[in-house]
Image 1 (cartoon, rainbow, N blue to C red):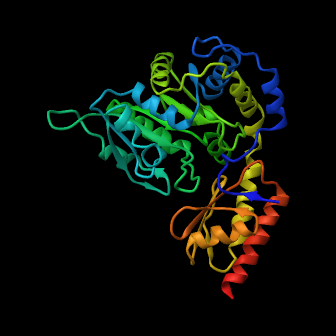
Image 2 (tube, rainbow, N blue to C red):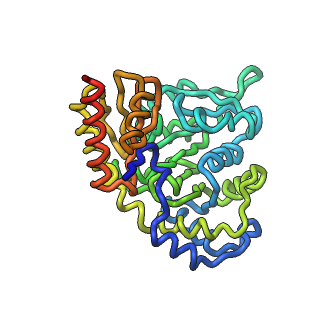
Image 3 (cartoon, helix red, strand yellow):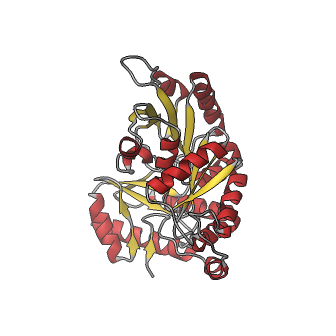
Length: 341
């Protein structure tokens, strides 16, 4: 068997998803006539407490459309210094929206309202005004760390007082909600727009959703088209998304539990120092180069991802059950003994 711990994006569609694909009622979504897409968008908006939803091919496109829909060229936006929006989206804010992207620090992925407010710019003849704040929950580069609702509400108060819109990159929002024992709609309530990914931990093969007010979603629809994201009979993909929202969000505790079990098991492996996971992502520091672990674990049929010169990122998901977890733990322990010798 091969156990793939590189990401929760590697999952395969479930049998129920394949059935839903075969039975999906289709239309032309660019013309607004795909009933399965419309059903998914309504479901997402209701689940997240927003007026409308919009289906996108990717979370990156949804994030960038949200920025473009809520800013003007020459504005300034704020995002965590390790945010996916700044780190992994090809300088999208400057390319698509012509905005100045500035950053704020966080403590293990948790933003500080005071730090955020200190970096807000007031528009003048010399400086662009900050008009949009971008948050991320859970935080990818911080190892799936979550930001509690109490802090989010404090940040929302700052944003409202200073006249900023808020966008939430919630690619793994359902993981955050599961870990915090909060309703996803409550976590999303602090944001004007929120993006959730259906292909990260929720088993859909493709797709993300952007939810917000009707006015903002209409503007985002234009940007989706401009970015090349208008799809036709995309109900085939949306059918999987409906299953994701109906059946996959309630099982995330299983992934979190296995992530903690993996971390606990690696504490005694020579050459490894696991961090304490909060959701389904486990960061592990390595004494030897991380690439050494990647290549040698691959030989043991366990796929892992180097997240730096001396760090691994391991991600649990539906396709790793207890048997797969046991296989991975045994492989790590065996390799640790080999490398120690």
